[in-house]
Length: 256
Image (cartoon, rainbow, N blue to C red; front, side):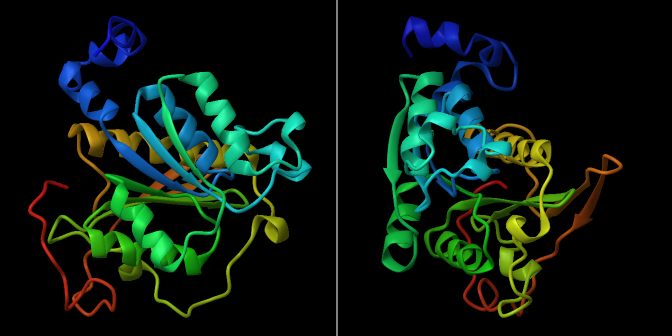
């Protein structure tokens, strides 16, 4: 680690559970973030600032005026530009040592599988169930931990699904495929700071998993009611009959 990096990350390094060893793990890590919207923006910014060495960011959309209320990595001057280009500019402004792979496309099929295989961890910051289920399946296939977040109206949730652990549930253990249609922010609205809170929690969980510190949210679901600012926690058991992780479950022997 260079002297400049030691200074940049000094406030993290001084934490006993982190130290230089934990920071070095972040620097050597690769994180895939699917979605550069309300959740992906704060998650990516905190991971970049904290020193994750390589971020793969994926989104097929362009910046619109309505995004600026909550998608804090984008600016007025970037309206009409691809979100991954806008986010890349912001992230490099935070941390010029960061390596960024910008994928201006919707990840699906072989492209999604390849992107997940290249990462140490995946942050799901997308806005539709079809992609969430596909990300979940790819993470199981490649044995990658998944940090999942969602937010709409004044409600948010965060969970960690770690397919390396034999006791961890997966996203499909929580939600069955073929359920209700996606609820969108464009139809239901969303409060700006809510996505920042959920995205920041996703970044925190990612850092803990990558550095091997603390206790992750694996097997737990956090639910936030922002109108009363109350958190609830639910335990999530693994469903032995789950179509994604049940019968063909593989154990990777890693700590959750």
